[in-house]
Image 1 (tube, one colour):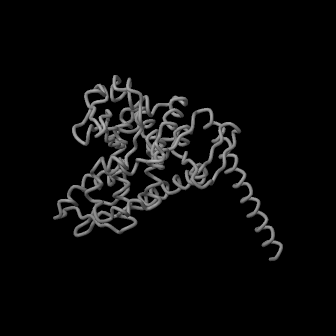
Image 2 (cartoon, helix red, strand yellow):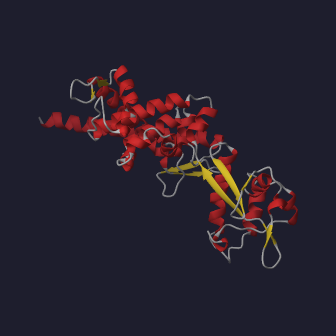
Image 3 (spheres, helix red, strand yellow):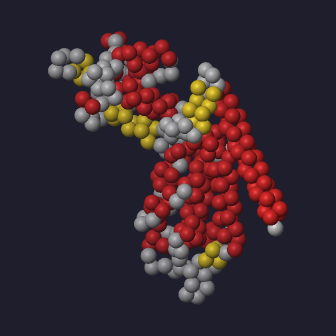
Amino acid sequence: MDLRDAFHVTLPEDCARLTVGGLLDSVFGEDGTTRQSIFGALDVVANPDLPDMYRELLDVARLWRDGRCELRIYANNGPRVEPSRPVEDHLGHSPGGTAVLDLVLEQTFETLAWFARQGGDADEMLGWMRACVLLYFMDKHGFELSPGPDDEQDRRLLPIAEELHGRGLVTPPADGEAFAITEEGRGYLGELIAETEDYVDRYDVFGSVRVDEETEIAEFGARGGLDLRAQVYEDEGLDPLRVVFLLRLYDGALDESLARWREDIHEASFYDGLLRPALDRDEVDAAALDWVIDAGLTQVEEAAEQERERLAARDALRRALD
C-alpha cells in the first residue's frame, strides 16, 4: 500500500520514547478520551477514509490484546519488529524532516493454537474435524477410497478411514471395493445436521444486531449490525470452534476446496481458516451481552410460538374441512 493511502496520524513528540507495543496500545487502546483525541487528529481532508480505517485498526488491536489473533509488525517495509523495541530505533523522516514511524501490520488467526492455550486438546479437535471432512466428501460427493490406493494423496487418507471404521461409521472394504458409509455413519451425519440446525434456529438471530447500550435496545436483523453469534456461543457454554465448524460444513464452505481437499484435510492452517469466525468476531461488553441475549432468545421463542399457533390453526382448519 502506498503511504499516501495508508492509515496515518500525527502524534506528540514524546511518543517516540515509547516502545512499539506501547505506542500501539496508546493509539489503539480502549481509553475513550484517547480515542476521541485520535479521531480529532485525523487529516480527513487528505484522506476521508481515515476514521473508518481507524475503527478497523481498533478491532485488530482489540483481538490482539485478547490473544485472539497474532500480529507481526514490520518497520519501514523491512525487518520484523518486536513490540518491546523502542520507537526511536525505527524512526525515519519525511522530506520535510518530520520524524515518521512507518509500520506494516500482518494479522493472522491461528485458531487451533488459541484453542490449545485455552486448555483444549487441539489434536483431538483436529482428528474429529478430519473424520467429518472425509465423511462429508464420501457422502455428498461420492468420494471412494480403496484399501490399497496407488495415489499418495489417497494413501494419506487411510488412517482417517481406519479410525472411522473403528467407530463403525464406514464399512471395511471387500475385495475390489472401497470404504462405504454405514447406516451408523449416515445416522451420525444426521445427528450433526440436526445439531447444526438447532444452532441456526436458536442463534442466527444474533447474526446482525444493532445495539444501543444507553437505551438497552437491540435491533435484530439490522443491516450492517454486529455479528455476535460467536460471542453468544461462548457465553452460552458452547464450544465456538465446534459450532463454527459444523456451520461451515452445513453451508457448503468445504465445496470451495473441492479440487484440493485431499491435501487440505491434513493441514492445520486449513482448519484455522475455516474456524476464523470463532475468533475474528464482533463483541459487546459483558453487561450488554446479557440483555442482548435475553432479548434475542425471547424473540426466537415468540417466533416459535407464533409458528406453532399457525400450524395448529392450519391443522384445525384442515380437520374441519375433511
